[in-house]
Length: 240
Image (cartoon, rainbow, N blue to C red; front, side, top):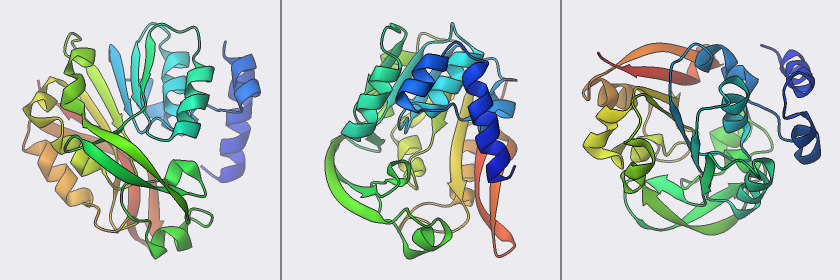
């Protein structure tokens, strides 16, 4: 989907959802590039890791109004917008934490484009392929493992975890531990090259999930770099 069409569809979504005034007020649009993926899923809770301002959570709430959401976003500025966007929704809860493989304080490399920020250093390749995502400044955050929040999703039958943390996805998976088998779906951003220095790439993430009882459904929103696999969102489902 080209950029113009995507922007047009996002603007159109403002007028076809009950969130119109909130979208216009806070200028947060649903991540409709994921619409074709999640609208066909049967999940009963969303764990939104790397929520930013709530774009993915907003899409989920529009498509599935009754599905509760537990979201994680470490940046104070983005978390503040998320909270205002979902004010009054008792079934949407945000934790202002980074998520990873252990509980500790971390330094977040804040990008000029906030949704490209990461615990990992932003590589020159990232800045070259996606102009305007260079590091702006640093910010401290408390990192927690997802298993620390097990009570949020363990009571549900078909949890969906969306993980988009700019190269730190593998560490998020490690931090779930064996409880990962409780998830019905894992929808994770993966890369074929290091956009963030030291990040684990698609083959390692794929093997990790397959070894724990998941199978890959498909790749979405794929980006090619010089004709080779660069980046994609990948849906994994737990085997029955």
